[in-house]
Length: 153
Image (cartoon, rainbow, N blue to C red):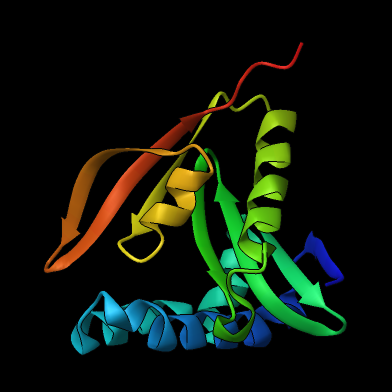
């Protein structure tokens, strides 16, 4: 699998939105109600994603010309990590997170926090994140997870 990680461009917003919406509907739906999924989907329209690209450091994963994943860094908070359902469990999320970590280290960020979905908690735990508390937005549970970045020698 020849996956490339690169910075997102404004014209990637539609493709990123499509990946996020598919992942929400096909992967996260097993852990969340339809109402929660619909509410979260509203935050990830192409226009909303375009605005996020302007505010955060956003990376995309590509296979050939196809965008298959995205992740972003908002100061020390990892956000919007999604991989297309048909290519999940192939290391794409791990590659995205490695790029997020490299970027954080370059900015001398000592630790990363991620508000994890129930669906992704195991993924982040395998990358060394520890659950520190639960957060609720109405009936939507998010697990706040943290990971210290070791100082480079």
